[in-house]
Image (cartoon, rainbow, N blue to C red; front, top):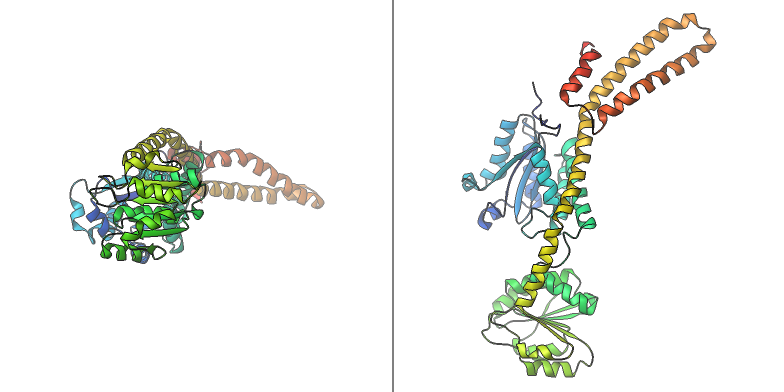
Amino acid sequence: MRDSRRDSEGGLPRVLLIGVDHRCAPIELREKLAYSEDETGELLRSLQESPDITEACLVSTCNRTEIYLLPQHEAEAYRTGFERVFLERASEIEAEGRFYVKRGQEAVRHLFEVASGLQSMVLGEPEILGQVRRSALTAEELEASGTVLRRLMRGAVAAGGRARNDTAIGSGAISFGYAIVDLARSIFSRLDSCSVLLLGAGETARQVARNLLERGARELVVANRGSRRLEEFQQLFPQSRAIPYEDRHQALQASDLVVACTGADQPILYRDDFERAMSSRKARPLLAADLGVPRNLDPAAGDLDNLFLQDVDSLEQLIAQNLRKRRDEIPRVQEILDRELAIFTSWYRGLAAEPLVAQLQKQIEHIRQREVANSRRHFPEETHDNLDRLTRSLVRKILHHPSTHLRSNDSPDYRQLEAVRQLFRLDDD
């Protein structure tokens, strides 16, 4: 009977993947299927109790939830995984097109692409690699992943790391927050010397603040018309400093970067405001990013010396240019994944051949010992040790090439392994 844990086409493990992501499930459904660290532990421990599942690993992020299983019995493992990971939290997932299932090589390739950022909502986004790494460590610590999934997850992390280091798949900003970070770095070199004035406290402002603070902005001053959103903003970013909205003109003079993202229908800072601020700055530049539509910053200020004014259109052009660069890198990333997949395939084929190699070596060694024992009486006693060493060396050299070949990337398929088993009558012991 064929082992359900092996892929009959190409010698890869019969990994089973069940998942949802941003392409097939709306945010309301993904929220229900997002697992915290504690919930992940409980789930993996539950799956370990199933006799139909040999190994398991869960990848859960804001945009995807995927369970990777090494099944003992595939149909039963699928039912168990689908029910416990998905159905128990969101019965509506059964609707057509709400989830996907991949097996064998397709599942392995998908995981490598996830770790490399090719499957992300934002192409090449950097966080996913760390999330896959943490998922792998969690499964290892709970002993939910064994020999195969542990090696598979490590291979995916290695593939993602090489894609990030050896290509430009993650270079260049493709969100407003990162675009502002890149512009600030090009002007000030270091963000830890920058004071930021943020006008607005809504969702866009929060994304910008998160990117700036993660990249080391020295000070974040925030002003907003409404107090409720300002309070919520400070709860999320306690390191920020709130000022009255009316003090924004004064705060502008002490800022290196001002980001405006309010719902105002007219400018909240005019050319005169920028002229006064620039007059007290000497040669110190000011970067002003206007994310408002209608514009929050007076476009007439754009010709002032040392003022770098960017609006939504100019930032979107930068983002579009960077996105094209990332898309151009996809073939190079795919080449890396091909190589990493070949490494994993070679390892797994070697793993599949290992019991056969060990059995072959054991049988040949048994024959050697028997023949040496029968022949010793024909040789002087003082030569017995040399006889033993000589025959061991002969056996080792004879078996070296077959053993290496069976473990290699060019190892035979399972029919050929069975032929070796029959030729040497390895099942007769």
